[in-house]
Length: 222
Image (cartoon, rainbow, N blue to C red; front, side, top):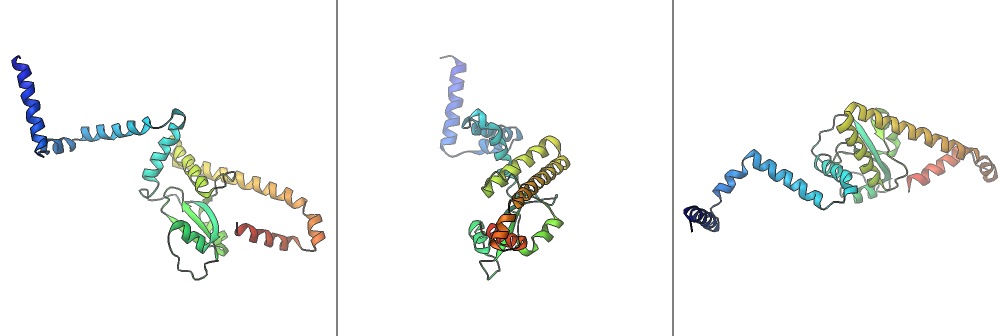
């Protein structure tokens, strides 16, 4: 063999022998390099996409971003809250694996999650819901999505997408505008529903106010 080949063999032997003995100093020094760290970071991203179909790659991107930053890292600054659901204290404790200082476990409360940080949760007695929502920016997400967690993720996806591509101010305005549009649509549907109630109310000899109380009680228990 020529000298160059022998030199290469000796070098590889020495490297293998060094690592076999547990001498990892060179590896540890290399891992401190910003270039190596960047390479490993990008390589891990590439590997994560190898497991994702093309049609799901965009949602995968936002899933990664939201899971990394939206589940604890962000300190919220926009006072933007998502109405998660209304339910009993016991239901909240079961869902969020926590215990409230409330003896009446059947009491109905409103649960709000910060749109930027899912770890920020506020529980409000249903009697104080209007006051809370008057003091905060509140959205409810797409009402066609019945699962609360899916609605929350869908709203966060839209919000983070807008923040990245349009900026925070436009993102907030857009989310609040969409919420107002949904509220108006809900009012229209409700008004149409109430038009057909007259016969029902007269037949059952109850006032519209009493009907509304019963209706809200049913809704609050869903």
